[in-house]
Image (cartoon, rainbow, N blue to C red; front, side):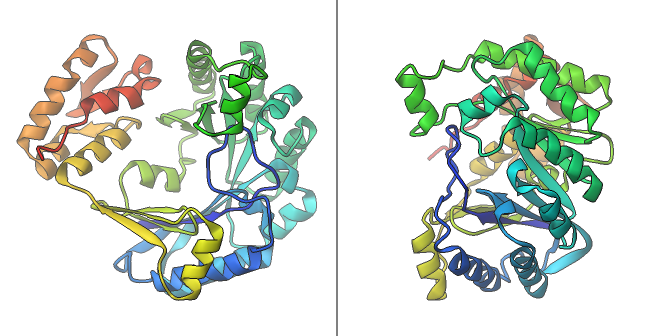
Amino acid sequence: MSGIYIHIPFCKQACFYCDFHFSTSLKKKDELIISLINEIKLRKNELNSDVVETIYFGGGTPSMLNQLEIDTIIDAVYENHKVASNPEITLEANPDDLTKIKLKELAKSRINRLSIGIQSFFEEDLKLMNRAHNAKEAINCLTEATHYFKNISVDLIYGIPGSSNRQWKKNINTVLSSGITHISSYALTVEPKTALESLIKKGIIEDVSDSQAQEQFYILIEELSKHNFVHYELSNFAKEGAFSKNNSSYWQGKSYLGIGPSAHSFDGKQRSWNVKNNAKYISAIQQNKLPIERELLSITDQYNEYIMTGLRTIWGVSLDKVTREFGKEYCTYLLLQSEKYRAKELLYIEDEKLKATQKGKFLSDGISADLFKLDAS
C-alpha cells in the first residue's frame, strides 16, 4: 500500500511560525492545478503499481480550492494509479474557510476526512501566531464540520508564549466536547528565517519555553488518556479505529509520492523532493520535465530513517527488523547506544521492540538522533 501527498502552495496570509512553502498570491493557481495533474501523469509508474490507500491534500491551505478543483485532481490520481476501494482522502482546512456553504460543497467531493488547523480557541494566541481565523470561527467550524464529516482531525499547538496551562486544558476539552476522535498536536517551534524568529529577536514576542512546552505536552497526554485516546505517534492521538492511515503509513515507512512544489517522496530506498518555487515548478512541468532532486539512501541512511520514525510510535523499533534488514552489527549498535536511555527509563524493550516510555516521548527526536549510525565512508 502507498500514499499520495498533494501540496497546495497557497495561503490567505502567512502564519508567523510557518516555514512551509506557500504563496499568498493566487495569480498562478489555475496553472498550478494543471501542473499538479500533469505531474501525476508524468509519475504514474513511480509507485510500481502499488495500491494507493491514502490521498492527502496538504499545504499551504488546500481548503482554498473549490469542489471542482479538488475532484479534478483526485480524478487524475484515479486515472493514473491503482486506488483502494475505500481510500482515506484527507483535506487540510482552515476554520475561516469552513462555512456551511463550503462544507456542503466539500461533502459532495470525494474528500472523506478533514484535518482542521484550529491551533487554539483563544483570540490572543491566534493573533500572536497571525492565524487567518478568529476564536469564533474556530468554535463554529467544529460545530458545522461534524454535521457533514464523521472523520475529522483537529490540530492544536502548545507552548505558545503567554498561554497558561488552564487555557491549554480548555483548548483540549473544547475539542473533546465536540466528539472529535483524532487530535494532532505540536509544540510551537521557532524555525529559522520565519517572522516568529524575527519578532522574538526584536523582543516583540516572548521566546518559547521548552519547560512550558514539555509541561503542556504531559497535560495533553493525561487529558486525552482520560478519554481513551491512544497516543499512537509522538504528535498524534486518536480513539481506537480513528488512527490516520496517512500518518500511520508515513511513520511506518511505507512509500508515498509527493506531488506539487516542495513536495517530498519516499520509497524506502530513495528520497526525492520537488523544487520549492511555484513558477519554476510550473515551467518545468509544462515542458514535461520533473523539477525534482533525488537522493539514494545508503543502508545506514535507511537504518537511521527507521529509528527516527519507529521510535515516535507505539509500534516502536523492531530489533528483529533491524537485524534482518540492516545486519546484526546494527542491532548490536542500537542496543549498546540505547543502554543509557533504558537506564534512565526513557526507553524500554517490550516484545523485542525498542520503545519510548511516557517520560521519553517528548525527547524521542533527540534520543533518535543519538541512536543514529554514521556511514563508514
